[in-house]
Image 1 (tube, rainbow, N blue to C red):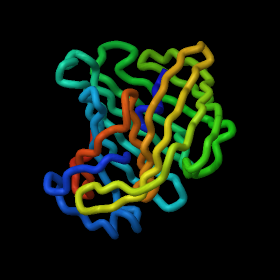
Image 2 (tube, rainbow, N blue to C red):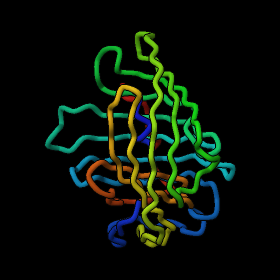
Image 3 (cartoon, rainbow, N blue to C red):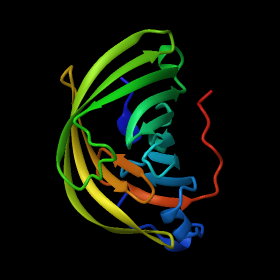
Image 4 (cartoon, rainbow, N blue to C red):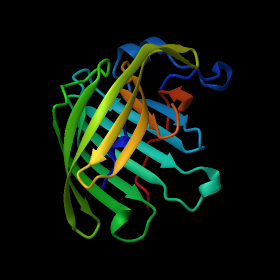
Length: 214
């Protein structure tokens, strides 16, 4: 099943290690931005978001495994959002075979438009995914989101709003997953990790576009 949770920040990052960005532009315009972060286990993720004020937009992400697990796959996802919720996605990996590419269509049930993540919520997500050989699978998952706190986080020279939360997702096959979430509403970016809140590495408006895995 295509994991939208890979798409889905607030620890402080060292200012001297990050390139300077125009914080006013980042927070008050729809200029594309790139956020890089890592999990406690060393998994590294880069998210590039092309947003607009309505909550629609396109998000690219690339997840690299920890160096100790170099044989694990690289994931690249392109997701199209409508009203703040994923609607379409493509996922590439460096696997060979049907799992090298998956596409998905997503329909939420009980998820408000542009949900601000400042309250507890349980919702369902129906997905229809197709693998690289044309096999289609339909699934419905249930997610219980818990709001934890709201504050700010410093990323380089920028002080950003940060909303902390956690989610538990159960598939219709009974598979469960728990994730720590950190949402930056001014960037319209969610960072997630399975072990603890992710650690922010950088924020930039100048970057090389993520491309599909060949």
